[in-house]
Image (tube, rainbow, N blue to C red):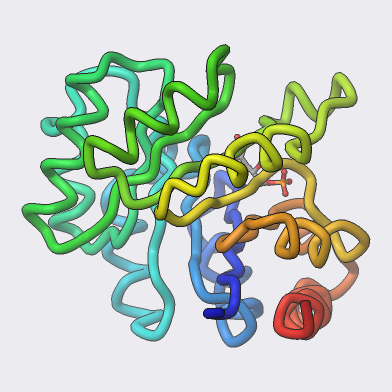
Length: 213
Ligand SMILES: O=C(CO)[C@H](O)[C@H](O)COP(=O)(O)O
C-alpha cells in the first residue's frame, strides 16, 4: 500500500512568515497547503511563489469554493496549484466546475465535507462525478467546540470509493498513526506543526510516525 501523504496547513496571514514556515517543513511533508485565510489575504502571488520555491512539494490551495467553481479555481490551477478545494455543501454544478478546471490543468479537485450533513451521500456522488480527493474535515471552530474527524473518517472509509481520503481537524503526534490506519491517505496538520517550538522537528517526527504506520 502506498504511504500516506502529509499535508502542512500554512495558516498564517503573513506572506513572508508563510514562506519561512514552508522552508522549515518542506523536506518532511508532501503537500504545502495555503490555508483559506492565507489565500484570501495573499492571493495568486503566493501560489506562484510557493510553486517556484518548492518544486518537490505539491501545492494545495484551500479555496473552499462555494460558487462559480470553474471560474474561481481556474486561475489558481493555472498559477500552479496541484489541488484546489471546493465545499461539499455547494451545488453539484460548482463541484463539477472545479473538477473540470482541475482536469483541464492536469491537477486534482478535493471535495471538503466540512459542515455537510449527509457526508456519505455527498462523498459518493462526488467520487462518481470525478473528484480525486474527499476531505474529511473538522474545522477550527468545530474543534474549539470539542469535535474531531474520526467518526466521519470511519464512515467515509467504509464506502471504499476508490478515491483518496484527506483528513484534517487537529491531528497531532498522538492521533496521526491511527488516522492513517483508519484509512486516511492524506493527513493534514496545521497547529501541531506551526505551534511547536520547532516546526521542523515536529514535521520530522510526524513524518517518521506516518511512514511507520
Ligand atoms: O483547513 C483548516 C481550517 O479550516 C486547517 O488548515 C486544518 O484544520 C488543519 O489545521 P489543524 O491541524 O490546526 O486543524
